Amino acid sequence: MGPLNGFTVIELAGIGPAPMGGMMLADMGAEVIRIERAGAPDPKAMKDVSFRGKKSVVLNLKDPAGVEVLLRMVENADVLIDPYRPGVCEKLGVGPEVCLERNPRLVFARMTGWGQEGPLANAAGHDINYISITGALYATGRAGEKPVPPLNLVGDMGGGGMLLVNGILAALLETASSGKGQVIDAAMVDGAAQLMWMFHSFQALGVWDGSKRGANMLDGAAHFYDTYECADGEYISVGSIEPQFYALLMELAKLPEAFKAQHDQAQWPALTEQLADIFKQKTQAEWCQIMEGTDVCFAPVLSFIDAPKHPANVARNTYMELDGVTQPSPAPRFSRTPSEVKHGARSLGEDTDGVLKAMGFGEQELAQLRGSGSIH
Image (tube, rainbow, N blue to C red; front, side, top):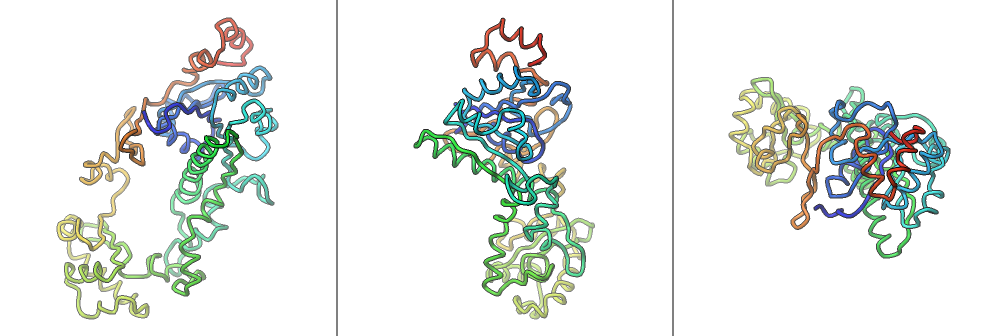
């Protein structure tokens, strides 16, 4: 019984950020109905974590009768998630104008890379492209080396899925008072730009050089904010920015007097080299014994395979296992209406009849729709 219990979300099948957004809404208690096409890969076989908690309905949206089924579903929904390029829903006959005419309270949430309008709106793209034109990719990597893609976390997930959920929740709050729905234009390029807010501030203050990579405090240039190899080949991370935390780093790592020049950027390369030699004298486990849990701002660098085994993650149940797949547990956490994963992935079309019956479709009507191939 999460905080979104009672809300119905229709998610048109897509990949990446839109399914992530639907997953988070389902974790928070919404009934999320994923609209699939006949012949799509079976969700149970895909091992796709984002399918959890969702119902699977198969419609033929190239058939007018299938489109009409979706529009009738829209009449009973609070949100529709559109993961397609601009104009695709309009071509299918389920664009915002049509859907809002059927349900004036509907939140029509559109998730794209470049946005609904602009010179790139209809171009193909991926996370790496969206973060390229926002400065995020340029800033990521070592000095003198090429930019390093930070997985697809910044554009797809942080700038996409998280932004989508944020917009949907805000729109639902507004609808509760106004009684009116609206269209959300959630673009990954916009989300990636939002994530870069701090560096625009730093640049304006003159404490960051945005023209350089690997030359600033948070991009790996500072010896006190970096990763270091240990004696066993594993790595640790240090983020001792504040003076009291840096003083503790000096104490626990037994650093010489030269390290007192924390913010002398001219000395950063030499201090980084010395600190690398020091950290390489002990194993990751030994450094954890010395520093983990202190105010050094320290952590071992773990693979996502090993992360679920870390004691802090175990204690907080940060991860869970479902359908044989280790995956992150629902977040954030609510004190009174906790989120939960209601079930794992459903088989393709497993919920078609059940969902449509709950929305007023009769047995004879469903039989006709199945016979014509409009539903599966």
